[in-house]
Amino acid sequence: MPGERRVDESPGGGGGSVLPLRRPPIRQSTTVRSDLDHVFTTFVRTIGVWWPLQPMSIGGGRARTVTIDEYTGGRVFETWDDGTTAEWGRLAVWEPPNRFVMSWLNTPEPTEVELAFTSLGPALTRVSVEHRGWERLSEDQLREDCAAPGGYSSGAYSGGWAAALAASVAVIESTPT
Image (cartoon, rainbow, N blue to C red):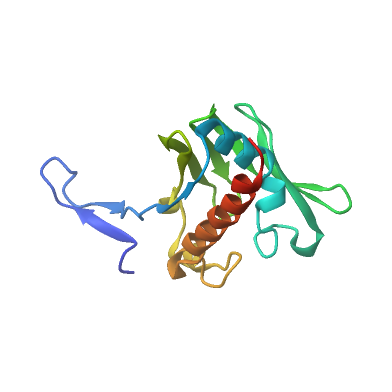
């Protein structure tokens, strides 16, 4: 199928070995009118307030909040109305206030999400997300629905990350420093 595999015929490339094509990561960013430390801390600690659980959750209407355990190895998870938790991933890197990297288990095969926070001035911060690892998924898996129809192949994940970042800005900017 086009886009799934290619033959590596480059010098020293194994002469005809079949390699998966790289699928580009999803990249989204936004700017927040606040300082770096406030943006990072508020983003993490209020994710349960601003994350759009409807429609972006495992538990659907049962989901009540999202939590990030603030340490390397910590969980990122949602909690349902009956107390059940559903894990979204684990923190592989925890470097406040600059970034965190987590496994993402809400895809048919695990992928990886990196959130980076960059100071652009005393009261302006860029928040960037890179969702990568799409090479692990088959063409059919790339088309599986997520919160919106069509999954990665349709741009649904890209739109989802843009919506999540936009939702975070309003809460972060309205939270006192």
